[in-house]
Amino acid sequence: MKIYRYCRQTMVTGLIVILPATVTILVAHFLFQKIDSSFSPLVTHALISLGIKLPHSYRIPGIGMVGLLLLLFVTGMLTKHYVGRSLFHYTEDLMGRLPFAGSIHSAMRQLLNAFGTANGRAFKQVVCVEYPKEGIYSIGFLSTNVENQLAEKIAGTEMVYVFIPTTPNPTSGLLIAVPRQNVMHLDMSVEEGIKLVVSAGIVTPGNTDKKKPA
Image (tube, rainbow, N blue to C red; front, side, top):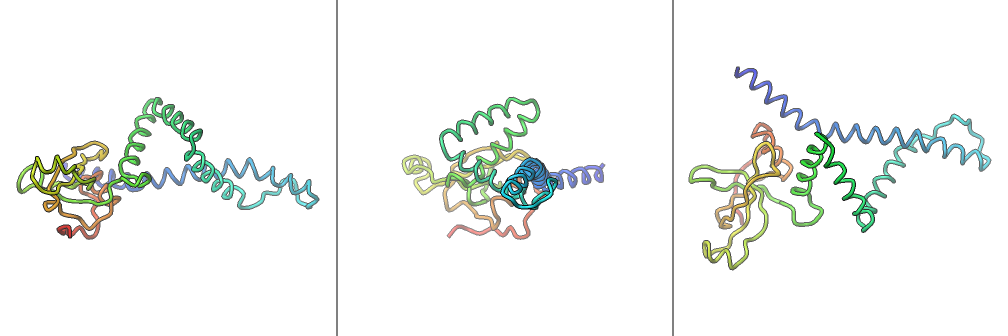
């Protein structure tokens, strides 16, 4: 039974590490092939019409990659504007309604929104706090400072919000207020912290020394 549990946990950990990269590669490969097969003949025909002697079946290397990069750039530009954002939210809503795939898409979107850095207010530090009781420590992500009025009423000292995620879904959890001096910063990146939580402690960074904040 222990061997079975160990093998299952190890395979789940491998899946967690490999799946995001595999999905990214497969999607990029699919888009590359579609763009290359669609635009390469058009470019070849345009060059022939300009007087350049090329076989009609000639494929120009690199068209798919250039097209993929342009697609990513245009998508990013459109998303920054109102029309692009509206289309983006409509697509998000449509994806969220799909059975099974919708739940996966929603979970991934929540994960990106929670731990991303686009809005400048994302979690930037992995910390350790003594919670839920003395002698037991929890991994968390440092959020923002507690409002002065609330901090004074609670402890009379400077406090910070710490998000304590659940395993294996870090998008849910608890938000606790902790005195800043009781927060121990961990020497790991947010990405390493997410992997640690999602894998239930199986995937750990090489160095997780605890240190008090300066």
